[in-house]
Length: 130
Image 1 (tube, one colour):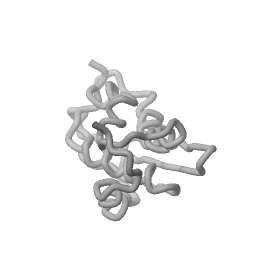
Image 2: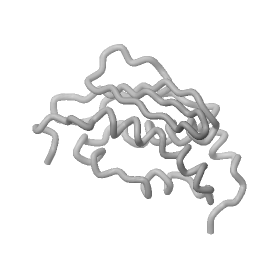
Image 3: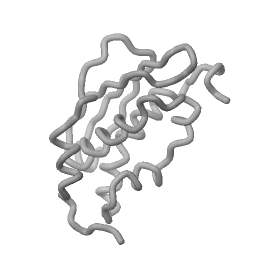
């Protein structure tokens, strides 16, 4: 059963608490994405260790509560993930992070963060692609 209320307590928690919304000075990958229909813009910086594990992420975001909340959830979820696992993430994964029944336009908002992350790792090193 999906929740039809857009601004749930969980969504608002992630909107108000964004520990990874920061400027990461030392990073390996940078990406960005936007949603022209809503005005959402997200820039992502990702730091990995020699084994390809994501050790930190920072992002800058402008936009609606949906895009920022989903980016916050996604950032929290991918720290500790290996780059090869990150490459497998898709739209369905992001949409499953919270039980909301999103309209098509709100789905675009929710996916801006994933698009920025995918942009950051589009030219991934062969050593991590396994």
